Length: 124
Image: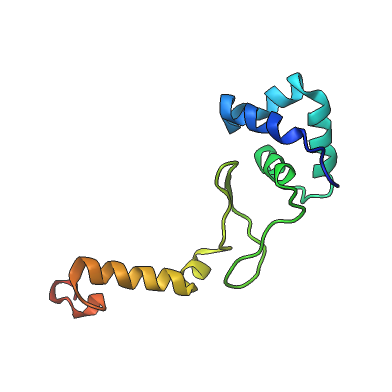
């Protein structure tokens, strides 16, 4: 399931000129052979994915959706061609991630000068 190397510049040019919203029509009508290769590649992918996600997975030669960095479950959220997939499977995993906890503590410390919001009198 490898793709020809010359497809990447074509896809990148279409995305940069028209944005990821209009890629389906541009590729389907202006590059029908590329369109067919993407569809053939997408046959091995999960059925419930959008055109932009198929294009993203084709462009980066990804065959499965990535796993959550906390629990390992398959990530379902796909943002855009530029952002790609989420790194978490749910809000619960976002809250459990140590990096998120550290960032939250740093923000509270920077804004309020305390380690926990419980220490602030007005927060109670």
